[in-house]
Length: 306
Length: 233
Image (cartoon, rainbow over all chains, first blue to last red; front, side):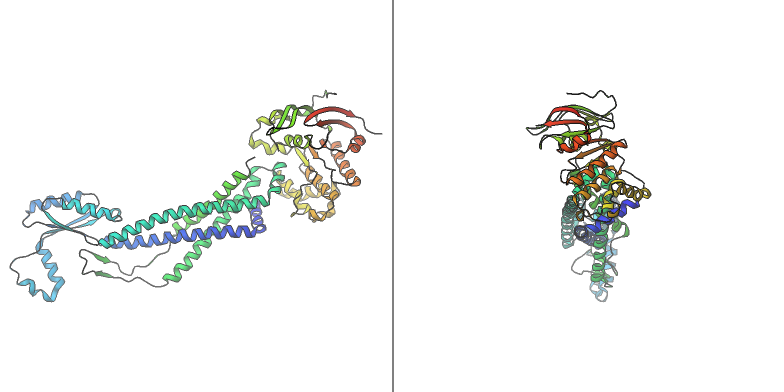
């Protein structure tokens, strides 16, 4: 095994230019695909925190009896994607409102009756929050309940962000596939060029009875090394670039409310962009080695057909 | 036509045809080769000598008919058994087919290693075969720096390095002067004496007369004659 490895290293060095080009191609592909992965992982983390803050508010008609309220609570809780349903009585809502406007609470004190309706505050479970359509569907279902007068969930812009992010995700998958195929094709061609340059040597080895493994194994090792090196260089470049851009900069949003956008808060404090986890990095590295192996396999299969 | 009545055949060829598209390269070839025979295959250029040698070593598939090597039918051999069958052969080409970027030593070591020799024995084996062909002093040279005769001696060393039972030599003296040709020919005779079966495709009638033996004449892809030529005394 060690000897095959040494032969593979010797082959890499004797065809250093071709091999360097293959390694750079793999590194570039890994860099682009990993950059996409890094973007989505961080975007998902931010979106997750954002969508965690989204609540659907369902306002009830005046005078809904208590019995019916508990029935509606159960009905909402049974709906797909609902994580938590909290009933907010109009008295509690008024207290909250007073607390919010503090200094001007005298304005409310003069009111003869509470103008606020009874309401439900509904939060969605995590997997459902990733798709904006789920918010809309749930809101429609709640609105269909008799006694529910109005449903609010606002944040149309966030819906659009989620939608754009999903489009980006799709584009990322498509680009990933494209780069995967392009890299496999390129590695296969590089190996093919090496095979052509050593055609006579391979032919002689076959004629004297060298086994398929004796001929092919160094090429496979070579392509695995190419893939591994490409992966390390690609991930390393991404890591350096990531640290350069992000550095110690922290996105400090804190917990704040958008006055103009109701029912929404950013419960984010000191969000910090993270690099790819060791598991994902190892996955990408293995993937790049697989790309090298696959390119080699396709090339050898075609070249050593006879 | 003289037939060989020896049952100890290492190669048997039955009604073999080889076609390249519409062109017939070999037509209905049949003969046997005995163990430790020195067989000449002769004939004009394009007669099918090289094609026949290539088919024996599984370099070309048979279009029709059957070839049996040491009891193995080449038409039915599995892909995984091909390398072990090829190890029975040592091949010598007219154009030497040495790897120009590898030294003499490396050219031979590659073959010794490819046939599965243990690592610690490779160096010893390569030195031994280089000594046999009188090239031990050139082990570090690159093939293009050697003369034609020297390159062919290296090619012979490579052919015998795996201890083959059969040596296939395709015009091994075709590019050489008389002296170098004589050296190569003597080497082949020596291996024959040691027990190898030698099949030699050549135009060189002088060598045939000097050695004597069975001569198969091919013409336009057909086996014209198979005769025993007595050794010139």
